[in-house]
Image 1 (tube, protein in one colour):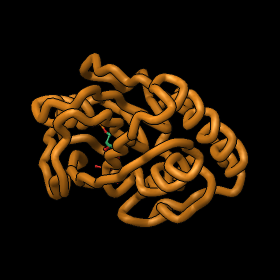
Image 2 (spheres, protein in one colour):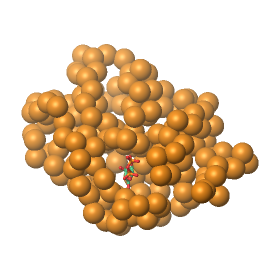
Image 3 (cartoon, helix red, strand yellow):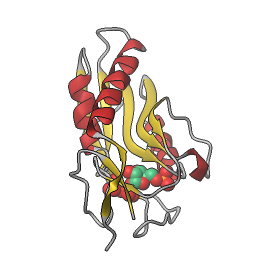
Length: 175
Ligand code: PRP
């Protein structure tokens, strides 16, 4: 069992909260004040980011959830993406923002952007709290990035290892 080490906090709760507030303001500025922003969170990892981002956002906001599986197991990426739960409503004519916890190889996000773009939203952008640029396998566009990080296995603030640690307020490196 991997355990988070107290010395290995990568991002404190305060750092995350402050960056998420900045991201919400940055995103809002890119749209007209009364545009409804439709936030599509990718389960499960993005649930905490979505919750804080949505609360920090001014103006009209609506939410939906989609679930995909990308990792076969543990810490390796299979390269395979499966749709586990689809959205509840259509995207036509809406300003859609995909809300993700992390972009790693980029395979999940590429898949999501392709299937959501096909539903003819008025606009489609992506907000990711974390990015590991050194791991990228495909060149995927991410409009808003919270933190670019090195290739370490991180958990907390929505991210898990075998479904554990999602509830941590901070992001820690597992040792
Ligand atoms: C993680 C993360 C992204 C994806 C990124 O999800 O939330 O969806 O992997 O990896 P990629 O860029 O290499 O495709 P995971 O499959 O761990 O599911 P979870 O969100 O339910 O934890």
